[in-house]
Amino acid sequence: MAILRVAVAAPVYSIFDYLPPVGCDLSQLHCGVRVRVPFGRGERCGVLLQVASESPLQSNRLKRVLEILDDQALFSAEDIALLRWAADYYRYPPGEVFASALPARLRKGTKDKGGACSGWRLTPLGGAVDPDELNRAPRQAELMKLLSHSPEGMTQQDIALNCGSCTSVLRKLEQRGWLEKIEIRAGNDAHPVSITEAAPDLNEDQRKAVDKVVAGLAGFGVFLLDGVTGSGKTEVYLELVKKVGAQGGQ
Image (cartoon, rainbow, N blue to C red; front, side):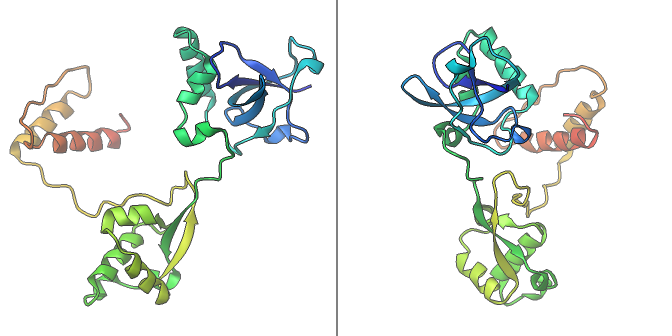
């Protein structure tokens, strides 16, 4: 008999045992998904922590999970272990710890619709167009160039962040057969925000600061980067992040 151990979002310090929903395919069930369960006189959202083979309670005393809310786990095994440790260490209700680790939209206990949102991508015809040849339509050229860097497409929001309000231009490109409207689900990699400007060149002082820190990466050290607001400290940080990332560090 399968027993589902659930951290229920309630101010209690226990993990609760439930029976699976009727007709549940256990082979498709993942620890770390949200579940909707009966609790007291109402219903609560919880997180599935474990699928066990037995419970200290008799099966006739166990209630059934009402609904599995997610197709994929929201918490990895490492996440679950960390949050359970945090609940134990801080003596805090485990269900509320897991609820606090979720974004507000997912705490509501409703089935995840995938967070789909509208987006755009180049059609094969649009992919063959050279944006640099659109001299008389600079806004169209800007959009075509942006989307050429994201062949899987970009969300409407990300396009607006890069190019501002451009709905009418997108429609014109769609009418020409160069763009097509798509649906992009949350978690899809097809919505990167493209960086359209190259990073500024570092000045002599910034370069010296970067070289000094990079030279000390092999060991432990402390560096203080001192400068007034607007002096260019952020560019130094970004350059260091790029160099450390290229070496597989963090």
